[in-house]
Image (cartoon, rainbow, N blue to C red; front, side, top):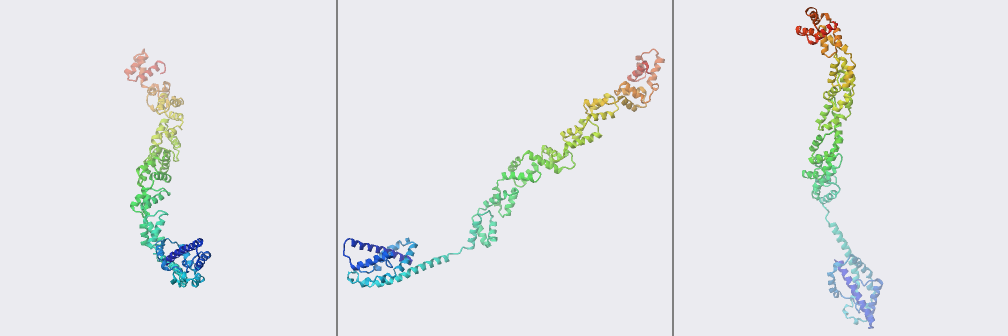
Length: 538
């Protein structure tokens, strides 16, 4: 404060000195009589101003007698300046402190006021002794700025040293606000970080975490999204577990989970599951539901998986399940895993086993022991071995059914008509049956068949063979091959008796009637005997 008052006084004296100089010059210009003493003093003051640019130590101009204005004469001005003293700047202080040193010697050089021969010209004789007093004042003044500067520096240093040191809690709070900007934290994680990493006490760390102003639900959302886009793609349950491991509260965890874009994440999660394992539509949907995904997000995610991708999953499933199953058995097993029938069929057909080749092998094995037509082979492969219809047809087509029909015909001792009909009934087509029949010796077949009737009469055997559609020559050959004789045939003996004894002039027809009506032979047998007797075959 002292320094400021000194500066104010200095500024005022400079202004008064400048006014005095101007008054002298004005007097000179108007031709007034110049007072020698006044001129001397004024000149000295003016010279001083020109040489140093400054007034005497306090900047107080003198009157015509060479005497300074008394402090009392400046009291009013000083009082007014005090009202505006707040406008002084620091540069004024430097300026003030340098003035006393520069002007400290000037009172000695300006001794003229003491030697003035015209004391009477001074309007204030009582102030004639004040130059000495004035000369001593600069020395006092020169010390005052230094003292003031020292006091100001001391006050400033004292103020700085007396500023309170921030408490540990304040430091922890500042640090908490700083690091919460760098990454996400839960309140507990931030407190632990302040204590374990930054070295604050438990109380200060807790204070910093509690008062840093963080929105912990927002922090949970940042943490959830940070984890959501890290591999592997997480489910809502994984996110919940992650947030819980970061010490978020249950409400904060809910907020964090809700901040994630789950529709997008569900799609990525579903495809990730397909890449890592084997899933059907049903299995994956149930799994995602149990993992916390919403039904709408699950349905949208699964709808984004193409049918080709599901087919590939079914093929992987078939490869995992296949053991000794038939094709249809494997299809059923795949369906039980949640695949559709179309997907299961695709999977069973495309996991690595060539079912078409297998069907061919099974068809060949079957036909080797079970002679059958194409239709029978297809039925066997499809219904017994459970191949698909296409696979069964493919496998059955590998058989030469002409050879199969011939093999069947070779084993059958039947007439041509019966054999043909039999082959057709077995499913062979007309060309196959026709070719098989053309390759047979039906006379031999009749003989073979006749062996089944050994012990019967000759014409009785013939009748049996004729009834089986053998031709008459084939039937006779067959009967003859058994060793039966005409002479031993009962019907033949009765016919000869009728012709020779009962009705020697009988006709063939009469003989037939006698044998059928009188002897109860069949019309076929009676007709054969009568025909042979009348045509000399007997």
